[in-house]
Image (cartoon, rainbow, N blue to C red; front, side, top):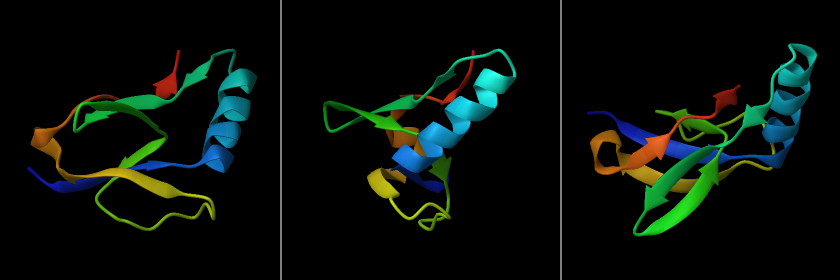
Length: 74
């Protein structure tokens, strides 16, 4: 399994909410369980970089070591 980064950005969340609202959907952030703690994330990636300036890594490690639900529009 690949090494992944779970990243959160309020700018990215706001952008996705606008895009999904235009499509008649609601954007929900993803949730990852890391060390017994539930954390919200807007992107999962194999890269630690982001185009959003306020991005923070909320969890990182082997993908198979996490339980998570992906973000998306519903």
